[in-house]
Length: 397
Image (cartoon, rainbow, N blue to C red):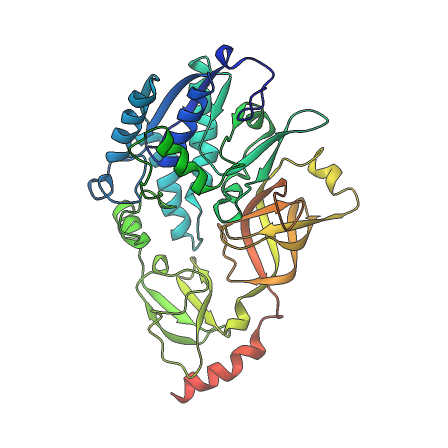
């Protein structure tokens, strides 16, 4: 049995399609599996064509990266295909990204890309190529479960763990997916790249949002949706107008700088009201969230989610940002949907973000599933007590 793919069959009898982005991680994944004797086929998805991104450090899935993936495939001696997914990627990821921002949300396009493109469309292509397994360079672990099937777990190296972006993976997909780097560190991966003689051994890591070449999200949205940036009011939690803005797409929950409002106390964006075109600001205390309402929940823990919530609620450990450690919470079924009650609360939770459940708060915890945040409820009832001194200071100025 191979240490990399955990299969009860000989490597030479196993065809593996590797999703090759042109980066170090997917390149090492392909080289490692080829060295272990698997029948490896490399596939690179051309997701977008942006002249600025094609040669930018940290870009992926365009220009130079396609060339790098092809060069690695030639180096290790595997067939390599480039598939044009530009129109599909624009429809499923880029357009939804823009629409989400216009609606006052903070989307996570990498989650949507994994759900709609890599683990759906690419998986279909892999099967058409006769693949037994689809492997990627994600830092996340997949393990066989005692009762059958496979579970998804956090990576060994906590700083590299990408499980937050994979909560939408289904049980059926996990049966065919493998992540050979989940038990390795990034340093080990780069060392393997050198041992395999790969020219990309020291290549920069790709950025989270590959299709935003400058890092300015609003520029991309205005190009995709002309006229989306409609002016409106900046108001406090009492509804009093403190200033004006040029479009809610220029703001995110928790933002402090660039508000253009004078105040005697620090102001933060606590809510974006797309219907009223309002940016609602308040004190830092008003950012604290205790309860999260979810949509599109995916459950990959034991049994069904109904069975997991047979006692009305279940303790879980929750991440609402990829960079935050999991914290304790309670998952409950409410009015036909699902909510999470955070034990300690969280600052700056925004609709559109992912809320991912784990069975533990430390180590290589198992991913139980997750959902997208529909709304967040302030920990302080209305948070008005914290706003009153600030509003008075603003009125005085």
